[in-house]
Image (cartoon, rainbow, N blue to C red; front, side, top):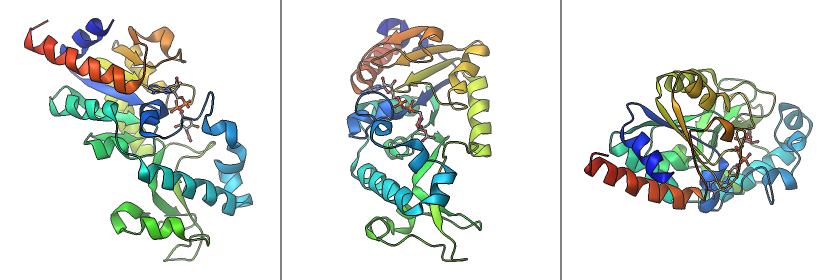
Length: 253
Ligand code: OAD
C-alpha cells in the first residue's frame, strides 16, 4: 500500500493535504473524538458555540486559554515536517487544515485554516483583530484572569476560531474548494471526517476525479472513498511515505 501511495504522490501534478487533529496528536495535542478526546471532558454546547459565549464567556475563555497554553508548548512533529518537505520538493501545493494549532505554518507549509487559529482574537462587536503571536502579547494574554476586551470599542474579545453553528471563513473556504478542484491527489491525515462542511474537501477531490490517500490508525467517514489507506500514526506513516516518494522519484517508478 505504501508503495502505491508513494507512486501516486511522486507522479502527482497537484497534490494537496487535508488534515485534522490526529496529525497533531504526537505533538501532545489531544484529538476531539474517541477515547480521551476533548469532547469527552467538555461539552460542545458549553464551550464551543456562540450561545455558550453569550451565556458564559468566562467558561469559554478558560477553555480557550487552557488550549492556548497547551498549543503554545507543542512543536510540529514528523508528520508536519514530512508535509513541509513535500512542499519544498515542489510536490505538495498546500495544506488545508481543520486544526487551529498553527503547527503546519511553523513547520513551513502553505496553509488554509478552515476553523481559524488559536493565536488570533477578534472583537465580538467591531472589526478589531489581533494575532497574539505577532503582537508579542500571547503569554501576558494567557495569564490574565479578567475577560479580554477590545482596545478599540471595549466589547468582549473572542477567539478567532469557528464555533459549532458558525459559517467557515469565506475566503478560506473558497481557497480550499478551488485547491480541491485542482487536486489530482489528496493526502487525508488524522481526521475523523465527521465535521462538515470541512469534510466535503476530500469528497470534492474525489468528485473531480482525484485520488485520496488516507493516513489514520482507524476507519473514518472517508475511508470508503479512499484509493489507498495507510493504517498507523501520522508521524510514522508520513516519515516512511516520504522516504518511499524520494526513492520512487530517484528510480523513476
Ligand atoms: P477528531 O477528533 O474527530 O478525529 C481525530 C482523528 O485522528 C481520528 O480519526 C483518529 O483515528 C485520528 N488519529 C488519532 N491519533 C492519530 C495519530 N497519531 N495519527 C494519525 N491519526 C490519528 O478530529 P477532527 O477530524 O480534526 O472543529 O475533528 C474535526 C473538527 O471537529 C475539529 O476541527 C473541531 C472538532 O470539533 C471545531 O472545533 C469547529
